[in-house]
Length: 569
Image (spheres, rainbow, N blue to C red):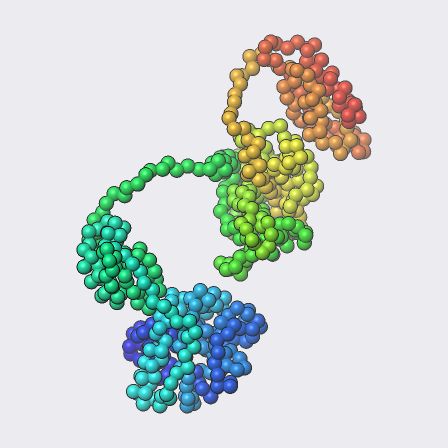
């Protein structure tokens, strides 16, 4: 008892103390069962049945998931294999006959069971790291010897040993030159053999300076020559190995174009006052529900993780917005209510489930904004962020990336308000989406303030960015500006009118800007007033009013024809 308590294990009774003592002495965990409490007087190792009750020695009851390994009698589990024994068959003061059981379990299986049950023990820790498969009989004999020597029992003759595939000894070959070349040393072969034999390796010389080493059965970590070199270096002493400068070909590192472009996007968003967040690539079905994804949405086709870090994140994410929204909620719950965050990270789309090949990895850019537009200060107002702040972030980013000639139109996008969402398009391809967070999604996440989100595909942005920047000199000649105010149907978008103006502005057309939109008492129902500032300019001369009027007249005729526009004075 004193020796095992010195090893950090409390004393319980003579039988359990002996099994714990042998575990510390020989490294082999074992368990003692009350023979009379074993149904059918038989024990077997099997997988648990889903929903089966696991009642362990800590007096806790757990329902099996169906993949745990148990030691069972003829009726029920008698113990959680490699982790903890069962309560019903434990050794008590009334026990008159016991069965000693020792085994060598697969370390990965015990680790999964221990983690799934939230139960760690001295035995599971040893099995997870690997035990000596040849030591089980020796450990049983040692335990029986100790019990008999203390007069606790009479040992019956014989053991039941199930060992269908005996472990073959592991042999590793090496030469002194190989070891010295790897370590950068000049250790004699005789010294190497001396070190290995002291560590219970059996060394046999072969022809040509080759040595064959039989690895001890308990050294499951030694399988290659490199492992032997580490053993020799450890005993020889790292301080006795001279420091040398590594030699090799120097290869200049570099980033892939997509990685460099991602850094460029991050820098641009950071310059605009947003903070980068870092998130795990994992998600859960609950996130899809909160985002109000339809049941048939392809985004729900997520890859399940075989060994998730926690039960909360069993899937690999298919949308970056879910991760951004989770981090936003975490900030809001800590009273950080003025948030401008973004993330540049991959999402994963499987080609088929279950996986037969690697999924398609797509890098996305997503952002979230809510709270005040400006920091708190006596000279700043408390105006909240609105849709145009988020839209402006996207527009400024595209401008910094030198992406132009895109169209902006109303549309629908995941988790965004259908009436307050803008899609940035090049032709029919969506390069960015920005909008107010859908009220139902905001409610599901517990976000009570107006919030705005955006999402982009990094590879799509890279495709349309200008590979080589160009610049032009500032205009030498003054331009001419004309204002155009008109009444149009309320369903007509500014983007449609701007495209028409651009097509019909003539050779001196330089740009158009929307500066006023109005709907009110003075405007007929179903109509709206829109006012544009149109610029005309030449790089070769000063324009005359007649030349500007010619382009302006072409614009008037086009908008009247295409939109049935009514000009306002």
